[in-house]
Image (cartoon, helix red, strand yellow):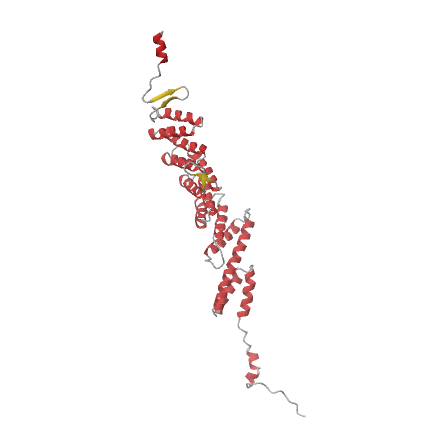
Length: 335
């Protein structure tokens, strides 16, 4: 009986660096992974379910390092993203998810990862801030939205989230006042997804981006011309769109701005004593932008610059100058 008591009281021997407790079962005391990827994944999930994020992260990392080429490693890498998302470190979550797709492109979680990344991108686009070195969220993160949406568009271009991410990429550039890249992003929506319901919205946003990228009338008018072109095409192609009224208003504003620029150029030539060139620009305003207030002003200037009409041949023949030159004497009556 004494021998039996001694044996029951003896501590359970360690197995190759493993320690056991009733709460956790066998735990590696040396940082080693368990004997199989299945065991290591199950072990890491215990801590995940307990919301012990630090320990779960540690164990998932062991799985990925020790059994990199196993199906369980792909799951472990995905779970690293889940851990970071649960901890509120959304940028680290995105990086872990992206790594899953890059290292394990055949993962069964592919569509789910794209969806999770897309939601993270929306979070950053909304103006939220991200954590820095694990501390409070202090860094504005719209630039991270660009990184996220670009990754989705690159990794899953033919997925539902690929086209959504490409469109949101344009919106993010708009929010950052990067209008040139916004136009490029929206053009890719039109080119790569011509049958998408997002095409009409993308065309409208191209015009909006061009409009916002145009400032005073004296500036280079290429962005204004591009906006007019895009808006005119939008109005013609999507006559029944919910955006039609707004598009009409912006097109009117752009035409007025363009006419103002032409009027300024015409006045420049007037000041330089080049009326012929000024007339060309005033006439262009009347021809191209007749509905603007500048058309009436241009017409008035044309009238002022027009040379006086030459008298007709009949008038010239009957004039005193034609009869003999000089002024005619008044007639006298002979009594």
